[in-house]
Length: 588
Ligand SMILES: Cc1ncc(C[n+]2csc(CCOP(=O)(O)OP(=O)(O)O)c2C)c(N)n1
Image (cartoon, rainbow, N blue to C red; front, side, top):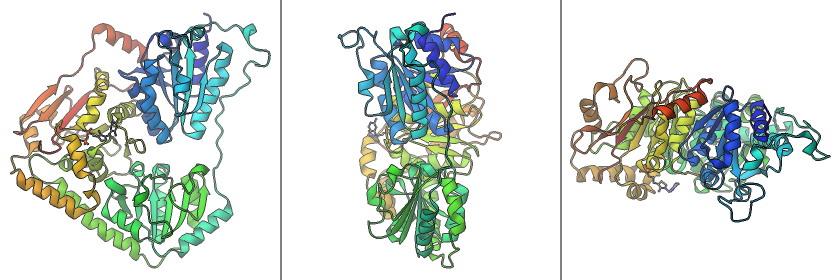
């Protein structure tokens, strides 16, 4: 069989360790689809229903595995659809490769069909961006695209004229300078440690501080143990940016939870009162929640030198891997005798958790979204992967669900885009077929890309979705924008609201009572209370508290099932069933 340019692309991706591509076919990528078909035993193609989801899934895949996430879209509209998901990856620093089709090489820029120069369109989002100019160009471009996305944690883009994809490789057509196979797929890694001098300077500052606060983010996800060790030594509360939610479990005595609009009061107090700030793997973007510039001495650890001093005027920047840097730093830190700063934060957290529990156990109707999040948090598997969409819903996910050790949590941290939650959960299930994957998503976010529920036409594991009611999402957003940090005002607002709407029966209780047994969301079932042996479907607890089915499971026709089956059969793959639980966010 003749080898085509697209074959080289796919083979090189396989050499880079890629085994999963999210995408949607189209005439502009026929050659690539054919090359994928030929290699279906080693690389699987997960077909989405909207290319934006493919990009979200690639981003999620990178978040959940630390590997390269890859998405594929056809020329013109398919590529355009990728864009929002690619920005999500760019802003959350994920390694993603986007591959798109381009029109016939000799018709580009002639107003031909789907004549969109996607390399130009992707200029801002991509750190590596190239148009294939011929079969002999493919290998070198793929190597650089993969290496750049992985090394610099960003988006690479390759666009490939459709006719060139199917071109045969003819060695003599190679230019005289392009020596065959001059590149490599080696992935080199450095130890990534700061200089000794920087470590000593940082230790001096941390040892002299009287009120040290740690602010940790996505870059600290693998460093929880050493961060707790340092928090104990320094008597320092650990404040978590949203993407760092799982870095240290919410059950840890050292953490004050999140920061900012979705955060906690003790976290904000730690920021307002600290004299020393230690930033670890975070670019928490909301400047107004940091200590005032000049208030605190500051140290920052980041892999990326460009990010040092980005959000706060730091005194010492430590460039390196967070875990390795912290392990090198920890022996230089003295055990502080005065732990009163941490103690105060811990007392604050006792009150905070009482408040959160109170909100999470109310029996008011319409049922409070906090109740659902609280109940969900208690029932999650020890290794659950829990994603959220963007909206008010993120607040309940961030605050009410206690992250436990071994669980993963993510959302669109910096882009804060809607519609990513479901796609993230799908990619989580693909990356980790045996783990429980849940997304907590608003009706707005779910209805933006509900088409990905179509993946749920297979048989095994279950996915749970909790979606909020379609009633007043924008109103809700505005009403809640400011009071988050002020318990009293939020508390009072809720009390007034409840007073204005006399309680009916608790919707969850009713959903449980009225739904068939196998759709019970609240009853324990075996080791994993959220995974029933039921058929997929969607239940909505209506205003009178009666559960009713609102979405029937999708069933692909036999031909489509057969087609999909042949594409992914040879690789371990998860099977999907969706359980969707909707609940009212508040009264309309
Ligand atoms: C793609 C996109 N469009 C618009 C917004 C602005 N926005 C943020 S939250 C939100 C409402 C979300 O509603 P819903 O998904 O129902 O969740 P809720 O806030 O009700 O929990 C909007 C429109 C956004 N972040 N992303």
